[in-house]
Length: 511
Image 1 (cartoon, rainbow, N blue to C red):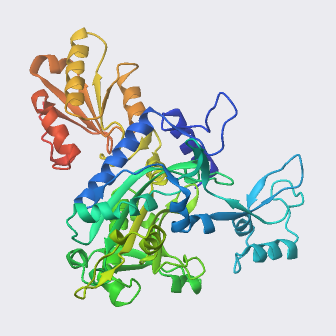
Image 2: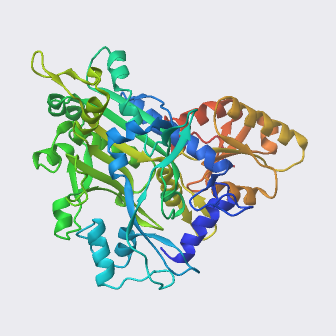
Image 3: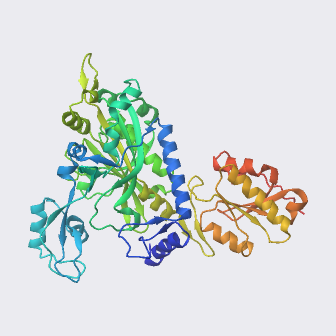
């Protein structure tokens, strides 16, 4: 993609009210802080609705947990001990910029084999690395705690703003186990904010200090991970995989395999985990992102968390930023609940195992989406620039305003009256719609194509005579004539994909 096209996309995101910032724009903006404008908020609402529907369809139940937790929670989870980045600060007082060391070195082309503090310091020293912004001398490699802490209450106690939603979902397990009458496995998901003290927020919504996650958890016993009915129901579904073994050989071949084939070839180890990998892939495909821009990349050994049995990142090939993770799928074993069992000393974290009388700590399989990244990439990938028009080609489930209503002209006033009736009907039936009367009909079509309107209803003089009107498709700009009385039914069927535009009967009579 050219720099001009990338600039155009980012400009349209702001100009059309999707993403604004950095914020607050009238003061000193905060790096990584962005506002979601009116159209962006509508689209984000639709994205959240889509995610909830996909999770519920697969029997995940939503919970909502506190944003703040006592420090002991994050000690048990391992965050207090391990949740930090290595940083270095430029010693030039006119620059003073702080850099995340591993990211800085990777951008310079170094392949990192030792990512310890000592290893990174040696690499900086041996190669005489200077500040990439001003070529000033860099300070020593130090650690930066990524958690946002606060003191609450009187007397004040240490609390931490959650750096992820997942751990707070784990803490609900005893209640969930009881709620589901001790039946396993248990499926739960949570959508909400998390906070991290990012060193250098960058790339719009891709790396910020406050962000939204949508994370699903399966609490499951080891025997259930192997005997997993949902895998059997979906074993022929395909995913696109880039295994660690190919990455190690610098082989960029992507494998298009069914999840059954992936398990048979031991690329994916367990049926339950393989199904969750498929679910992540299926959810992202539904956002209208081209298939060639989606892949699942396995973590290499040096990337793998110490507790992980397996980990894959679902990545999207961004037009602007290249391949970027939007979702992590993790086989966490019994690490999380074992730690909370030890720290809390609560027996409620144990469940019945496969053997009679056996008590085991449940394993956790996790699917973790970054909502901001999904939102940004679905938007970015949907912009298309044609010779005469700019088009935001989003799926109808995501587009902020699927329908527009236009009186052909401002006069006679009856055209506006009918248009307002139709607009009100669409809103009353929970369909996103706008009504626009400013400018020529051609300019109105162009404006609405740029914000993703899929179908435009135009009221003209013939409408006043026979109660028919035109429907226009964003895809090929063609128009059909329909009965006004059928409009809501047609809109509903289009929204729920019960019919296609091609299947709508055209009432136009050839002369």
